[in-house]
Length: 117
Length: 112
Image 1 (spheres, each protein chain N blue to C red):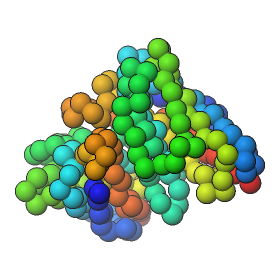
Image 2: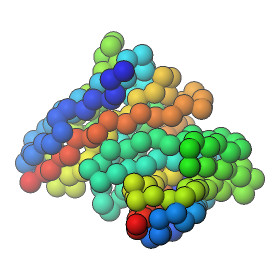
Image 3: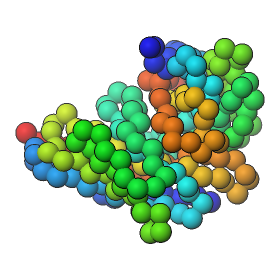
C-alpha cells in the first residue's frame, strides 16, 4: 500500500511569488491535513480537508489556502510569499480525520522543503 | 488556547537504558498523539491515546486524563531510537476548529 506522497520535495521561490504544493493521501483516506514546521515555531496546524471541504483551520493568514479533489488529493497554495514562509510543509492523511475524535493515527508524507529568497 | 508542554528538550542515554519523555497539556485537549521524527523530516505516528495505555514493541505510552499528563517510555533503548519525539494534543480551538497543538519536541540520542 503506497504511503502519503508529497511533491515536490524541494522548492525555491522568491518573495512575492506564489507556490502550490501537492499531497496524495493513502488510498481510501478521506482526510488530509497540512502542517508547517520551522525551527523557531516548531510544528503548526494549517488546515484540514475532508470530502473536498475545509473542515478545520489553524491560525494562519489568508495567503495560505488549500483545496481537496474528489480523489482526496489535496493542494496547498501560498500566495505573495514572504521570507518567513520558508519551512518544511507536511501533509498527513487518515481515514476520517481529526474531527471524528476516533483512535486514528495520522500518516505523514515526507514533506516539501520550501525556501523563499 | 490549547497548549502542550514537553520535557526534557534534550535527552542522551546509553544503549539499553529505560527512557521516559513527558507531556503536559491544557484543558481543551481530548486526544494525545506521540510522533517520531528522524533527520530528513519524515514523521511517523507512534500512538494516539485518549485514555489508558498502549504498547507497541519496546514503546509504551500512557495518559492520565485527570492530571492532563502523558508519558512515552522506551525500554531497552537502542541507537536506532535516536530521533525527535513530539507530542501533539488534539482539541477544539476557541474558534471551534479541531486541530493538533504540538509540543516543542524531545531530541533523543542513544549512545552505543
